[in-house]
Length: 264
Image: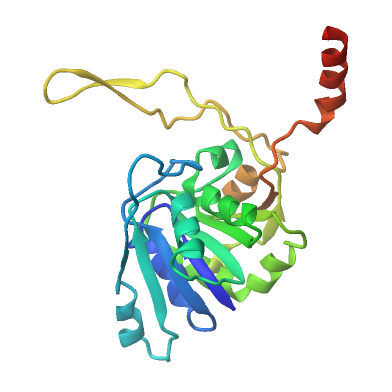
């Protein structure tokens, strides 16, 4: 297959390196990823300045050091957001993928955190453009077990793609922070609710000015019998959640339409 790989951690992040290293054994890989870390930028696009793209050779060393022949990789960075990378790759850099994979992210993208996620938003952008897309993340900020997740994902890529039977859909896949031999299986779950403190943390900078840092401690926790993506990952499972970008509240359409008719 022809595969476009994107991410939000940046083109030289360890997660994308592990994914590309495994994918290129069997597939033709085109990489277009942010020049700098774009974590938690969501689905933003760059509007008020020019974007630039540059071809890179960061993945060439894998081919030189591999014991088996690896397919060549075409790779670019873009000085924009993950969604920018998808659009530039498809519209300007002649990428012609069968599928788009975003990741592997160095941290989970679970529950309502997907609304902040550049990783998920890149896959969502691809889905909006009509491509089958998968966002892949690995739990915690640690640097281990990327290869485990990459090998498992690539070995089961047909299984994951088989879940994408309709256009304009995407999958969100989260791996636990474990070696592959400790994975307990795959579970399909709905998005957990992630609630954080509203107040940012006040910190004095070196000049004595007060600044504000985003809080990372959650106010929510998983119940024992939850079937959410977060609960499954915490229990050692690979969590899969099907997503779509249409966020219309269809259940309330008729109710609000009736209200509008009464009003006018």
